[in-house]
Length: 574
Image (cartoon, rainbow, N blue to C red; front, side, top):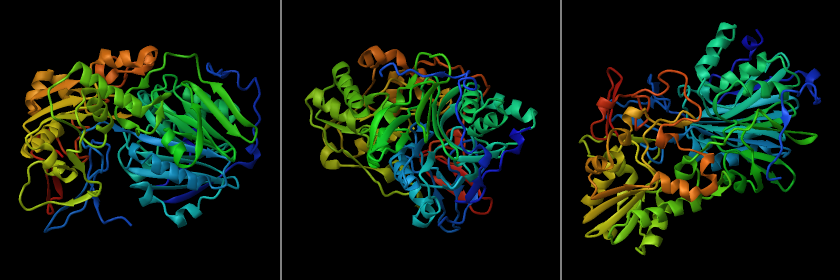
């Protein structure tokens, strides 16, 4: 089978690989006949430490190095260990002589969407050159690495993982060779029919090199009977179910595609020299001085080559179901996502909380950084001063040394420090973006009360999360979600606050107005636009707060104990 002949992916740390292309297919022309299955799209609006790797169900970075005297633990440096995590961010650039360097900068701007790994594929002289690595963008790339990626065409990727374990061979972009050339791909999202597709492909002789759902796309392209290449992409995408915002690269083309529901964002911009840029968020465009033009529409495939920009439609239009959590938590406040300002959305969430769930208070504070804008909106509407009652440390890094004496709420105290001068003797409103398990919220409430707060009132700038996400967001199983198991009053008692209120779902929809039906609320309602077909997509224990291997039973106060003899890890909650 053609799919079984796909070139293998890189499998060593920060490995560089090159894939020559079939020159006989260097310049493919489009024809109406070969694109019969794709109608034209109409715009309706016109150095690493020595370590050993733990096996884990949790698709996060599972690496721990052991010092016999003081165990040193490396953990995922997320903003909030308990928060849902966006899978990844993508970028693609066509027509700029410094494409790989611009990709590098754009990935920096998208770093909040994934810190597990990063990669760039650049095209130079009919060769796809790939560099990928584990860690932050600045860990993977330096001047000499970028010098190995010349060319005016490139794609890039930063990742967390929701499908596929955390290992280098799963770091994107993937590059594969097949009988008509080579193709690189970077994917943001999650395919709900991944296992079914993979099983069918393996039955037909395909050999998989990774555990990532993205590799399925490459195999589908390889076995497609359609011509030319763009028709193969359309044919492959029409077999996918779930969320995907994807960028592809060949020797002469940059292609961007978005699933018909538009779950995950993907935007297009243009630099002053005419270079076309695709990115997950507009903040990436801002950094590289590209002007935002529009979104890639749900169900659209955009092709950029020497002939310019061409738009195709994957299939008949569906009602868009864009992820509302992009506006609640994932995206940066300075981004424009789904045509709306993220900053303005969060500010209005806070205003709604102040209007519909008022409480007598002396000061409003935020859980930094994700709760800040909503807290500003709450304070302005309530006429109460906003102050920095919690200071977030930006220097915790990815490693800490376990103290000899157990410190209560150690993980939270490493990241958040209360300001006693702001909190002591005050009635405090604390605004956060969401509550997932509730363990971190309870520690934050305790931290504020220990700093002398008279009362602590929690206000959450999202509705209660009662269901898992299957569209590219790393959330726990429904059994682990506190709002699925407890009432608001029971949660209030669990976290220890004097009052607790969530953003009402009806009020959220009212704020969105006519755009309300275009958003996905599955995590708040349990009603899925694309029903997960495969059993046990999310299981208890798949998501552990600190990103290390462990079970729910091991959560016992926010600490990690390593046994250097057995090399087994006991994991607590951070």
